[in-house]
Length: 362
Image 1 (tube, rainbow, N blue to C red):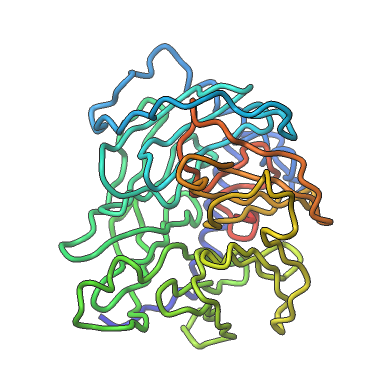
Image 2 (tube, helix red, strand yellow):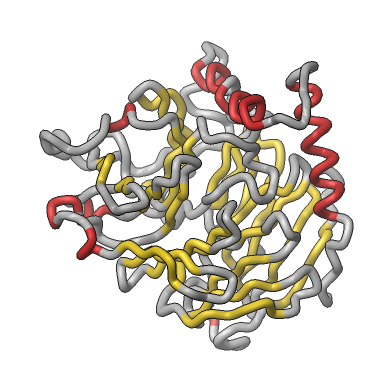
C-alpha cells in the first residue's frame, strides 16, 4: 500500500483534544497550560485505587530486579521524589508510575524484549510499545486497544495524536510509518520508509526506535541503523536530513529546534532548523561519578532542564540525570532497588497535553 496523506489529521486531532478538555473542565478556555497540566496529574489517584488489581488479565510477570545496594549518598536532587513520572526500560519490562517518591502502579509484560516508548494520556490510559505490539491500557489494567506486529516485524516507538489516533513505525521488510485510528481500527497513514535491506531479517530489530509527529504536521524519524535523522513533511518529502551515528530519538522543541540523542557517542545535542548545533551534552560535561552508561532518550522540561535516560551502565550507574541549560547536574537517579534501566521518562506535571502534538518535548 502506498502512503495516505494526513492532510486533515492535525485539525481533527486538535478538535478531539479540545472536546476531551471540555469534558474534563467546564471552565476550559484557550489558556490551557495549567488545566492541561492538571488533566494528567488528576488521573493519578485512579492508579492507586483499591479496584486496581495487583496483576491484570493481560499481564505477565516480568523479571524481578536483582538485589542492589542502596543509592549512593549525596546524589543531587531528591531521588524518586524529584518528579511524578511514568518510567520504563527496555530490559525491565514493567511500566512504573511514580508519585511522591514511591511506585504507585506497575504494569508487567513478561520476560524478553522490550519496552521503548510509553505515554500517560489525559484520559488516564497508558499507551506503550512492547516490541511485539503496541497497546493502550486503563489504570485498572484493562486493554482497550492493541495492535500486534505481524511475524517478522517489530514496534519500538509510538505517539498518541489526539485520543483516537496512534503513530508508530513497523520495523520490517520494508519498514512502514503508520497512523491507526484506534476507534475505527482503520489505518489512516501507511508509508514505506527506506531500509538498509529489504530482504535481510537481521536488520529489522535495529531499524528504528522512536518516531515523532510535530505540531506542524511533520514526521521526525531517527533511522537508528542507517545513521541519520530525517524530517519529512506531510507528503513525505524530506525537509532536512542529518547524519548521526546511532540516533535513538529526535524531539521537536517548542523553540523550533530539534533535540537528538546519539547512543554510541553518549551525546545529546540540539540543532536549529538549519542544523547548527546550539547545545550539546556529553560525558565530559558532567562529573565522572554521574556518568551514565549510554544515551537512549532525552526529555526537555518546561524550565529548560534536560533529563537524559540510560540503561545505567549494566546496573552500576545512574538511570537518569537532569541538567540545567548550563549543564549543572541537579538530579541523579541511581536507584536499582525500585527502578530498572530507564529507556525513557514522562514527567507528569509538565504543562500541556501528552496527546497534543508539540506539547510534549520528549
